[in-house]
Length: 200
Image (cartoon, rainbow, N blue to C red; front, side):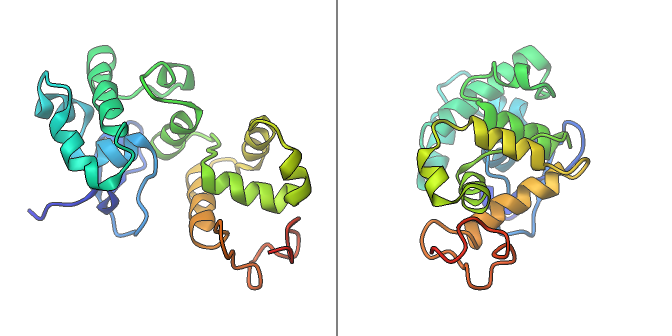
C-alpha cells in the first residue's frame, strides 16, 4: 500500500468516525490536531500501540516536515488518554473533549462538527478572517478585543444540520479566496454585502 501523508486522509462523517479514516480526494483534508494527526496514523489506540510507552519520538520524526512540532507530543497524549479513559473513542461532548491535553475550543468544535455531525461552530484563522472582513469590516475589527463576538457570530451562522459543510466551506474560502494577502475581492460572491468590499 502506498504511504499517505496527513493531507491525503479525511474523516468519514459518522459518529465516532474521527477514529475511522479513509483516503480522501480533496486537496484540503481536516485541519485540527486530531484530524491531521490521528487520521494520518490511524486510531488513537493504533497510535498508542505503535509508539509504545515512549514519548512519541517516531510520530515526532514523521511529523517534523509538517511543522507545528508540539502537535505530535499533544497527539500522543490525546491518544493515550482517549484509550485509557474512553476505550479509544473520542468523547462527543465539548466539556469532555476540552479536558484532553491541548484540546481547546476550536479543536473540540472541529471534532464535534466534522466527526459527530453536531451543529457546532469552528473559529480557526481562516474563519476568523472571513467573518471579520464580511460582517465587521476593518474599523470594527481593529477595535475587537478577544474572540467572543466572532465565536457568537460563527455559532449563529451555522445552518441547522449542515455544520460539517458550512464549517469546511468557510475554512476553505478563507484559505483559497479571502486570503490574508491579495484576497480576490473583485470576483468574490460575498462582495455585495461584505463590510470590507472595495478596501482590499
